[in-house]
Length: 260
Image (cartoon, rainbow, N blue to C red):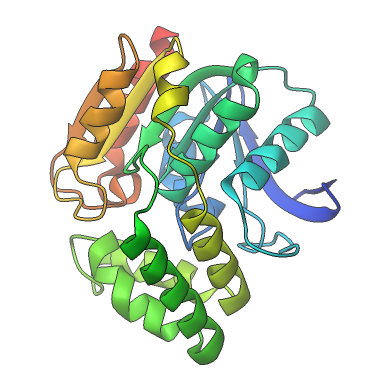
C-alpha cells in the first residue's frame, strides 16, 4: 500500500479505480479496509482515495490528540500530493466528523459531501468524560475493553456474524495509543452546524435504521441544514451501514455520485 509523508508523518492510503475522485474517511477505531465493499462495487466508475487515519492501519500516529482538523489537514495534504484539486469527501462516524472539519478547512476542495452514521453536534460534558475514560482504559488495559463496549453497538448483526468478525479484526489491529488519541480528538471537536448551514451542497446523509450511536434523527438534522441534501435510511443496519448493508449503501452512493 502506498504511503505519503504529510505533516511530518507517514500516511498509508489506497488509490483505487478511475473516474471522479471520492475520498472516504473511516470510522473509529477501524481503517481504510472498511470501504472494501464500496471499492469492489464502484471503482470501475470512481477513483477512491482511502487514507488510514493517523495511528490506524499503516499510518503513523503523531503527537497529542488526533484532532478532526488534523485529520482534515492530512487529507488535504494527501490530495495535494496526488494532484487532486477537488473531490467528493465522505466519512463514516469519526470519518464524518473529519469530513466536516475538511469542509471547514477548505470548502472549495469539496465537490460533494457524504456523511454516514455521524452527527454534526459536539460532545456534551458527559460525552467528553466517557471518551476520556475510554482513552485511559485503552492505555491501561489495551483494546479488549473497547471491543467489549463498542462492537455490539457498531454491528447490528452481532459479533459472530461475518461483518462482526471483520469489524472486530480491524478493531484488534488498532493500537491503544491510537484509540486514546482519537477518543481525545473526537472529544475536542467543535459543533459543525454552522459549517453545514453555509455549505451549498451537494450532500448525501446516510444512517443505519438501527444506529443507536448516531440514530437517523441525527442524519435528518444534518440534512435539514444543507439545502437540497439527500437523506437515506438504510434498513437492517446499525452504526456501520456501509459494511452491514453494502449493496444498499452502494446503490445510494452510486446514485448520488452519478448525479454530480
